[in-house]
Image (tube, rainbow, N blue to C red):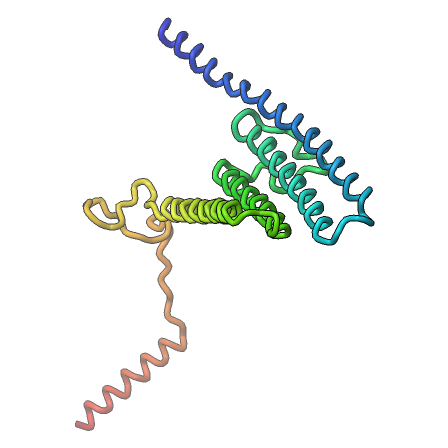
Length: 226
């Protein structure tokens, strides 16, 4: 009795420890305001110097805005999906603005979305450096390309591993199904409860009876002739 009580207390404490993650997600939500301040500052800089900046500088500034927007979207995915997967369910499914992907992203899908967002952010950073390639050394450009390639390869390998794991899980035999080998406890296949169903025997019709009599008469006549 005491052992069960102690076990229940320990399990309850371990299960309640998931709420320690809640301040982490609140901190990530607060970091969205920091991204917003940086976004507005970059937007104000581009707008105030729109007539003096060159085309390449404007493109680099816009790419910086896209980079910040993707980072904010990545934070939203991590906050909402992470909270629902590891802390508690969010009971707002009846809200009109409820995202369609909420509640359908498990930990595996969260990893794929996270890597996809990182690849997109890395691609934008690489594109920004290519726009100012004259100001970037070959060594820095080489490392940017290597890092981006590593992110791409990692995301592809992760997607392939999840696909292989999913197909392996779907191909596993159901419990109690030995594939028709090894045991002698085979049961005849067929519809469930077929032994309880009455066996319907087709009754001969009048046409069948007349045809049978006609065949018999012809057979007797042939024997008589012979």
